Length: 115
Length: 113
Image (cartoon, rainbow over all chains, first blue to last red; front, side):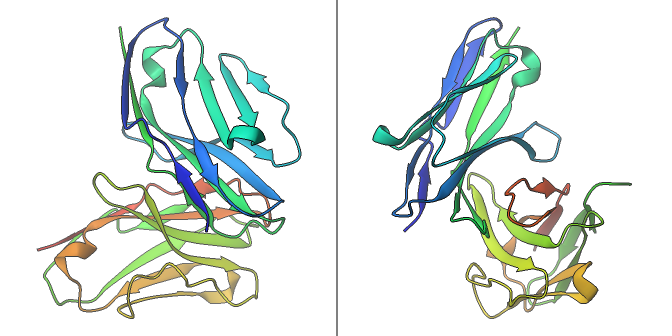
């Protein structure tokens, strides 16, 4: 069975703090993909990143970075120097195999960044 | 616009009525997904269409729910004999095949009284 767990329901930080959103996944597939999506307060879900199971290199994009560790089945997301505009619900998701049909989403983490 | 378009944006209905929700995907996207999002819940998968393949209906919660996709483009999600527990935001997304990079619409908020 496929499962994505985001244990942190809500996180609050003050601007400029760094924050890490945790994601743990379960799958027996050897080929799979992991994703992060962002849902701002009044907006649509937006794709942030996709990683495949064969690439454990960490990725950095501006203030965002992702740490993929197969040994712990985790795909954590760090925002450096958080800003108020980062306030949103963040979803981690898992896609199976190479055909990537349905995505299995976690329940999301509500991040609030206070000024 | 160039994004995924959903209608209606809001629908209030009485228990027992049927409702139809429409999704117009991004042109060229052959994959189309329906999810629903309830308060405090995550994103619950409903159904997935990919090209001319048989849809993955494994997420439909009951036989009151059905969806079709005409001409490989527009999709309609139909809920028959609505129940209060059907109240949720129904999200449609589309993508190119095999990418997982979903483009979501703004959703249709359904309230069943």
